[in-house]
Amino acid sequence: MIVEKISDVKYRIPKSNFPFMRVDGVIYADDILFEAIKNDKTIEQIANTASLPGIVGYSLGMPDAHQGYGFAIGGVAAVDLKDGVVSPGGIGYDINCGVRLLATDLEFDDVKDKIEELVKQLFHEIPSGTGRGGDLKLSYEELDNVMKLGIDWAIQNKYALTEDKEFIEEYGRIPNANPDMLSNKAKERGRDQLGTLGSGNHFAEVQIVQEIFDEDTAQSFGLHKNQVVVLIHTGSRGLGHQVCTDYLKEMDAAMKNYGIKVPDRELACVPIDSKEGQRYLQAMAAAANFAFNNRQLITYNVRNVFKRLFKTDKIKIVYDVCHNIAKIEEHEVHGRKMKVLVHRKGATRAFPKGNPALPEAYRNIGQPVIIPGSMGTFSYVLVGTELAMKETFGSTCHGAGRTLSRNKAKKMMSANEAVQKLREKGIYIQATTKSGITEEIPEAYKNVTEVVEVVHKARISTKVAKLKPIGVIKG
Amino acid sequence: MVFKFLDHTADIGIFVESFDFKSALEESIKALILLIFGELIENDIYEVNNGTVEIQSNDKESLLVDFLNEILFLIDSKKIIPLKLEILEICNNGLKAKYLAYPINYEKNPIRLYVKAVTFHQLEIEEKENQTTIKFFVDI
Image (cartoon, rainbow over all chains, first blue to last red; front, side, top):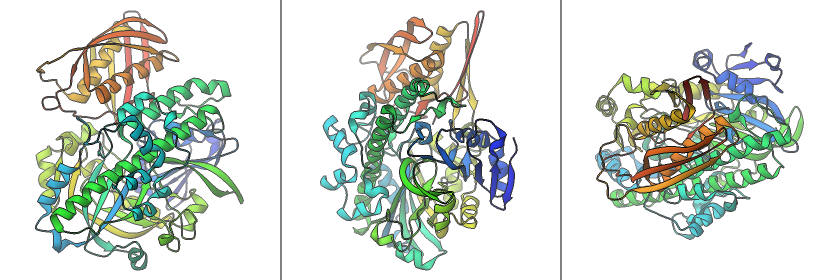
């Protein structure tokens, strides 16, 4: 396949590579990250995604891109709302997997003698949910309310403060959510998983703001050096996985009725305005609202632990971003404004200042973009830019991205060694399983700092602050 | 009958070899359960669940994906491990199976690896006389 380097941070996959490509592919990467991207099927998957009917602009890959299913993880594809398709694979099995950053009024000195206790208590209060489930088993009626109302459900039930809503993407409630569009199986899988972390790369971390790159923006986000913050990374759990599984099956069968052919079955898709497409989007919105509430329940437990240990109730949400989602947005494509459905699969929205989708508090600053590192490595706060609107449908990277398989990672070091190495760096960890530690060692991931440098250099989001973990809770 | 796990950057694959498609499917279930729980430690069995699974799919590949996803659902939602599973009837796009399942004892058999879904990614079914191989990947 022909791939051209077009700048220090950009590569192009010309559509002339395959007859099915409707647009070019563009990958944001420097030479080092591009070497990693070349090693698996990422480029092929970005090219395949360019086959989606109605795709506009480019099929995009972020610097953390790696091989996924159908779509690459770290991929962005926008399709014309009028004649485009929706593909559940472009959102992924973990609908509205995302991250939420909480800012406390504490500094490192306030917590340094209690880190171990803090981690223990957080681990105790935040169930992984991969065993018996969470503390809450919702009735089906209540579960429907969680999905319909989004964060308003949490506010009504005192799990959220009224002001939390403003600091969540889509104000914590994606419109058109319809729980009736979920199968009973999806509901059954999710019913006892609200407020649970899950496993894999999901985590909750206590972190310290180690470095500020953009003083004014950091201040507007309520961040300062040495401040204690908490980062939560999880999604819609089994409920979202089942929605994806159910609709992939439905679309796989329905595609032929619309005369659609795709180069990979995981790219199964149907027209947005078809009955299957509309049903999926309503189910996806419901699962996304479940995920907002999932991160909210964890926030509730984090607040309780901090209140108990440090007598503080000043824990604010900096922002909550989705990184597996499809959104109807207006963008300019080749000089023309149009409504598109943006699929972000392992990518974060990165809107600039002035965008009406942003809450008042950030409208003159830009959207906070939160980039989690791998276990025990730095995380970053960035801000959305005008260039992201022009080049990437207002999107940027979402994390580090794996480079080693779980098996290879496990062979590199034992859980005890990994824990010891983290301790030496001043990081305490508690995990449900040993494999949860060994499979997620930092060595198995790309260097998040390199990923962030690329998006900063490409100006599709710019650096605001660097966060260093001191405590890790893993499922 | 053999199976092995395959390396994948983000996730894990399973390769199964058996004498026909039906037995390869049954073997795939065993492999999936081993991937999730590791070697099972004998349970203190308080109750045994009998159940049946009926699947209607679009074709052979989706039959495999749908059947294995059904097993994930039983583990995640019903919180049972369908250990003794037998496929009673099978055709190219449908099957009926019965199982004996045990409630999961999370103390003895914690979930070692949570599997989100079985996918079509690089899925391969190869059938020859007296030999069927299956390869599929799961999302972790």
